[in-house]
Image 1 (cartoon, rainbow, N blue to C red):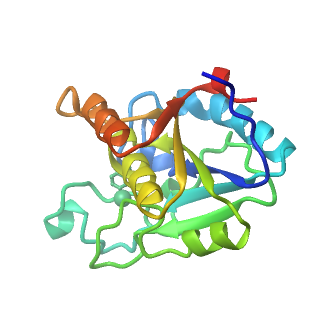
Image 2: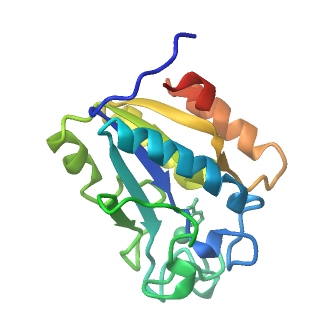
Length: 194
Ligand code: VGL
Ligand code: ZN
């Protein structure tokens, strides 16, 4: 495959690299901390090329519908303003990073960075037509963001070396990757990017 050259019409979307999703956090994604240095390298490339860098964050109210306390599937996590909701301390987010808070409505589950946010408007305003998605979890918020991106008309590349998933039951991460491929998403790694 020809290498992909990053331009100012591209955006790097870093999904939910927050403490609660790291090993030891409230809803840990195995090995999620190991992709921090890889994401930092992508940030440098995108910054150097004048591309947009977006960091989404799961930003729940204490009584969010997805919590077990309300009959949902997840232990309470990423509660607004808590340390668990902070970005991983080693994530080298530039000053210019666009922070997108999602899943803030107590009564609505939202996995995609586009769902209930102004992310689409921000990208359109900048003329962005291609997005590169990394972060966690591959089979939840990464997948939902990538598939929404396709539906909204973006070219979507998922950065395989910079995502981690929750593989329960085993095979769910591979299944999610196949769903993304079927939706028209491109899978790439650092070798494909220039
Ligand atoms: C996520 C489960 C619950 C994610 C967020 O970021 O993938 N997963 N909330
Ligand atoms: Zn959540």
